[in-house]
Image (cartoon, rainbow, N blue to C red; front, side, top):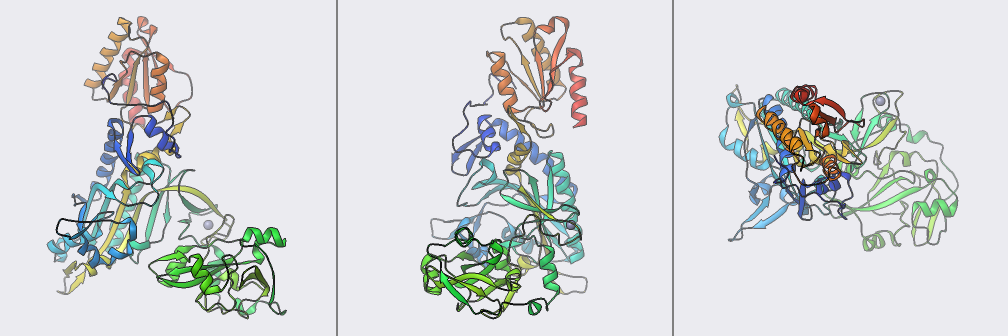
Length: 578
Ligand SMILES: [Zn+2]
């Protein structure tokens, strides 16, 4: 491609709304443009990278034996009602009506459609197992789209769905996908961690893993162990103490508790844990944090120690609830009789979910359910019931690892780029995907589903591969392999040599971008750094001796002088290595 004609609208300024470095660089480099919040056009360079990523994804997923299909984005609501997700999915599901008032959704995922399809076409074990996948546009009405391609309302995903006759078959398919994912991300040049995850609203009883690209800008907390391979996302992560607690029922009754009576005292304006620590000169570990939630519309209170934070996923799972949100001020007032910030467990007439570390406190300070008052000498088990004790908090940096003896937990940031789920029979039962087994019995198919955020990968790769000059594309997915830059467009010898090299490389099947613009060298090099093509060949005065300058985008060292006749061989060697 000749750059003079290329549609690569680079920008000098950083877009004002772009927080993530990948968002800034993709817009500056002319790879994407925003149409409206969370909705982007892919310009030629962005489209080329996307296609290269898609090609790797297809190659590796095909290799597992899966077959590609293309399913509709427009999905009738009754399918979603059959699976029970029409309500559960909430406002993120884009809903619309056709001219006769029939309801539809724009698919954020395709479990319903694929299960319906397979249910209608396969009825015997002889046609199983089967895995189908697609690379397709998804829709999700994000409350707060941000970070460019990282959190969008319209995005490209690879989603695969497997149908097996037994759990062993599902395990095999799941492992094949898990391994394919590792190969895909490695080929895309990503540093990743596969972590245990919570199944969430997608459901299913089996295992689930998320694949996290490690990046400072990531929105997810990834919990890892300093000693062993334990890795989980924050929703799912547990610590050694919670494992020990779950296996020891007598621990709570053995605690030596405070015998002094409950002692309400005046704490004017101290609504937050920070204000209490400051105002009372106490430690967070001496306080109980009581938060009121609405779980499926009914109030519950969750208690964790003042120095801990509540894990809402653990709360939802313990309650078996579908929705959980913090109670509003009015509900807090109605349930506790006090303003926000003074809730406590004593005398509270709602279910109490008590974190196990609260249950073992000998005494604590907690809200008194009276505005501007807290109570001292609050004794768990004496002053409030320990009916529902469990692990309701997020793990913290330095907690003990649940799966080895010495390790401490560390928290790093990650971008979720893929997930694999064992769904079991959740969807096949609801949508009638049955098969007749060898014994002639009708059984629900056993499903798995496997997603990769294809457009999100562009951003994740840049988050891991950039410098002050711009993007650094791995050769496997770069928009072009080589950037050819003549120094002086008015110098006939340089332009001739550039044109000949361009023709030679193109004929050899190498994707080349030739900067034939009438621009100063400085401008050309700046743009070249910004768009991050992995190899750069500069043709200047040295061409009189048959020499050119060769530089790898990733290298911080000076350019190398090589003979123009060596360029093709050097490129091939570089591509073979990467
Ligand atoms: Zn460990």
